[in-house]
Amino acid sequence: MARIAFIGLGNMGGPMAANLVKAGHEVMGFDLAAPVLQAAEETGVKPASHISQAVMEAETVVTMLPQGKHVLTAWPDILKSVPAGTLVIDCSTIDVESARKAHEMAKAAGCLSLDAPVSGGTGGATAGTLTFMAGGSDESFAKAKPILEKMGKKIVHCGEAGAGQAAKICNNMILGISMIGVCEAFVLGEKLGLSHQALFDVASTSSGQCWSINTYCPVPGPVPTSPANNEYKPGFAAALMLKDLRLSQEAALSSGASTPLGAEAAQLYALFEKQGNAGKDFSAIIEMFREQR
Image (cartoon, rainbow, N blue to C red; front, side):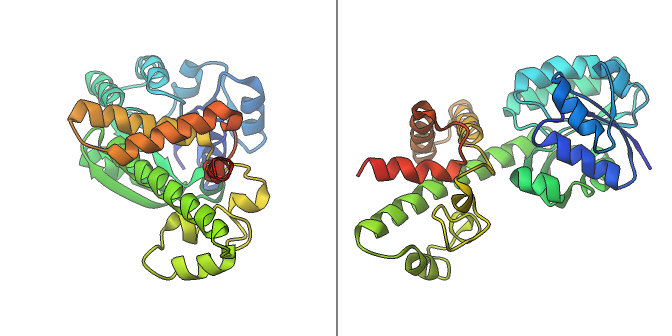
């Protein structure tokens, strides 16, 4: 059993912390939102009134926060409250530059660190089937892996500091682009008189197959577990997809990479959000394409 502090207990962090409790770890958590903290307490997480209380006896600290600025605000408070050698893992999805700054903070404090964003959404967080993309030293990864394995089914060491965030940004840019392509194809199929099932049966078993069709089909029927069958309740909210696409474009600009489809995907999801759809699943963007026919 390990003593773990978990900072950020929202839609992703809450179930992740709960899985650590189920695995037999002692978890103390902190969140600025009192209802969220109370919900975590009901799963066995011990509530703390502030960050320093949560981390002061922890062997490992996990953060799951909205943006890079929140990580860079929280980590100094964490690092001044823990002894040298403590492992600090950030599972947030943030920009690569902020992730590297957090690693530098940890190194200066004599602590081990890992950026380990996740893929799998709230369903994966609850089921403990997340994929973790990790960046950091071999020592940090080796120490973190047994803990991450209690929250996910695939743990990949992508490289040094910031590599986890880089992998997450690239992966979700692929996802955003592919979902738009799948949605356009289904809207075209509707216009041409194809049934959803017919197009799915062809595309899911031929050259058009991808996760956005086979696992997360954006029309009701072919994949019963997809959000399309539940009024597009997320899953993975459109606002979060837009956040990740914007991170990809910031990274493309700073690195000099050409990502024209990523840029177009970001613009389309920005329009979708502007139309009041931030809280819908990202696959609901198919509705916007139908309206533009």
